[in-house]
Amino acid sequence: MNSVSKSFLRRGRLPTEMDKQALEYTSSIAVDKEIFEADLKVTEAHVAMLINQKIIPSEAGAKILSALAKIRAQGYNELAKSSFEDIHEAIESKVIEMVGEHQGGWVHTGRSRNDEVATCLRIRLREYLIEISESLINLLQTLLEKARSEKDALAPAFTHTQIAQPTTFGHILLAHFNALARNLTRLLEVYNRVNQSPLGSGALTTTSYNIDRRLTADLLGFNNILDNSIDAVGSRDFILEAMATYTLLATDISRLCEELILFSSDGYRMVELADEYSSTSSIMPQKKNPDTAEVARARCAQIVGMLTAAFTLCKGLPFSYNRDLQELNKLLWHSSRTILDTLKIVEKIVATLKVNRSRMRQLVEQSYSTTTELADTIVRESGIPFRAAHTIVGLAVKKALEKGIEPNKLNLKMINTCSKKVLGRALNISEEAIRNALDPATFISRRRVEGGPALETLSKAFSDKQLWLKEKIALIKKVKTELEKADNKLRKTVAEYTTPTVS
Ligand code: ARG
Image 1 (cartoon, rainbow, N blue to C red):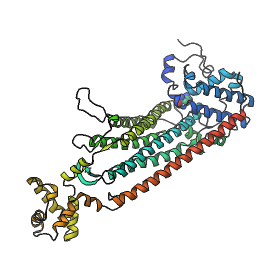
Image 2: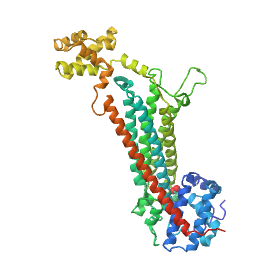
Image 3: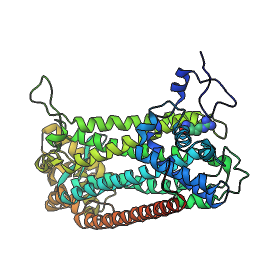
Image 4: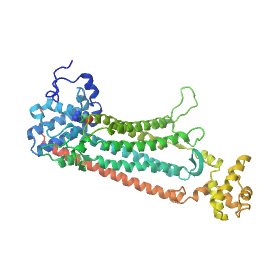
């Protein structure tokens, strides 16, 4: 049975309490832990602006501001003890409890929970985007260092999971660097679109009070305001965009983990995870399993899943605010934390990875992976078209495999036997040219084209990437300084408008 409502939100229009189960089911208070601090800031900026615009009595504003400071000091847990629809209601209720309704009752003048929550979400997401970008930079830096120390480590490169051509392990690691680095660019782009203020949009059509949206935006460190109030409270593409970027990032991390798992498996044995990131079996004493990378791969799957849930939630919603949007927050925070934790752990896995150079060399030497270079050499030396050379070498490999001849034992005689079959004549090429072409080191050193594994090409790439990372680090530092400045301004403004005591 419903009892008479004690809620200041319900007591006018809905004078009975909400059903307890329904309140628990619909409340976001647990998830709103993420935006507790953001909501205090948003409320402070809003109240300071209301005082500044002479919309509320300065005395009431001052009391509210000092109540907010007290609430901050008491912390989220104190507030979450009672049941509320959300953190916004909880904070307003606490303010009223602390300073009385005749003063505290002014706090929500000219705003709605709709613009309030949208602002809080953007503030918290900004912090996550910065933290995630910083963790990604750490991973990129570690990958770059590892790639540098493995720049001359001969390694097999795969297509279709079959050994294709030789390269260096540094070249392989740098491929992962490039893929992951694009996500850093994406994260920083998303940040700019997140960093716009919806505050002042009210429920959806702004307000008739003479509010100053630019002032609150400035105090909260936003670059701009969103210029349509319905869009400002109803849009969540900033969340979808962030989650989509996490998903692209997670896909690349998962592929990196997959390679580490595969390359550490018994068939490959190219790398080994440090003991600290591995597990053993409860029954098979010899086992060393790459569990941490496997869990990271699985967490990446969850990020994809949450994105699917988020898009599905949004796609059928009319503008502007619908309570469904509250459920999106849960997905956003969960995927933000998941990608953050995953980045941190994968960085550690890469930093401590052991690379088995002799095994990688063995894999290259056992394969016929230099024969692309042999075909190319035949083209250059004897002037025949590539397709003919490809056929001749293909035939030679087939024969060698049938007779159990090792890759580096392919010789002029065998090549010419095949050439006679294809062209009806022997080739004008030396034994030495064939020997050189089959050498994996030569294969690599000849690939000096931009993007290739030759040492000088790779070294240039390393310094370019290092410079690129430095620029991004500087950019993030600038963004953080801007936020700090805004925060100091907010603190100063709040102090100016606050009376020292709350009874
Ligand atoms: N807890 C809500 C959310 O996260 C806050 C906005 C509530 N607005 C409303 N009209 N019920 O979305």
